[in-house]
Image (cartoon, rainbow, N blue to C red):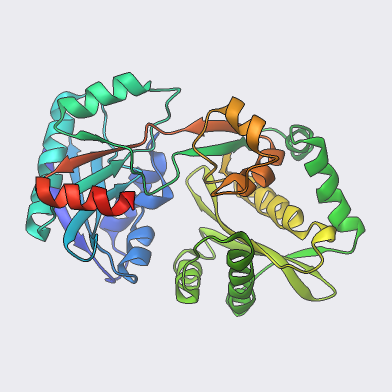
Length: 352
């Protein structure tokens, strides 16, 4: 078994990148967040990145794309493996060898800690099993996650009619109402990113949540589109009212960014834009559509509270639940601690 590491940057896309991305696309727990393009996006906004991998019989069998950044008042240098590492967790030797490579990369970068957030679903690996596993490999529990651990995943394998039928009646009605009320949806281009950013700012003000700077959404579109991303805009009389940016990798699609205006909300443009994103992903051959983030609560609590609660992701859940799909939760995060003091500082800062 051979293991290696590679620093990533803005270098031209290489055969090694293509091989890595094919490995990520085919891996049962692979994710957009482990792709070369995701590293390139994050590298433009304060992160650096490094990839480690292992080969067996000249074939990639495991790996991790690690992001590094200074956090917690700039004092703590942390490593972060979003939706990774990609490894056979049942192969103890493979896990140990890969973690050794990750540790070396973290040491060279001066990281005081490393956070992993594999895209393992709790219905595939119960929480107790996951905890025993990561502790066995030298990690500690972490309630702090960077990606939302709970989400809704829509199965795109049925027909469009069946996908619509699986939605809540009100959502199905709103999708059709948008068309009746004159809302049209078109696929956007780079020229529409200014309008999308304006919609994002309006949404952030209205719903009181943080958004990225305009340059971030532009970079995401430029790096991933047209092969792996599309921008969909819902308009009325030529005015953009809502938009979604959807990403694909392998057979998976993810709705990462969405926004809507304060105007003409009775025309339900957000529902029209989301349905366009779903249809596009299905037409691209994707079998699942990740709505990417809802409150981290059990389904009974979600259903009991979504009509009244307004904090955090609760308004988002009220919208997303209508599109059907299955509520799923990842196993969450675990930390590797290289410097106990710095890890405690990070935990304190995140807690605030």
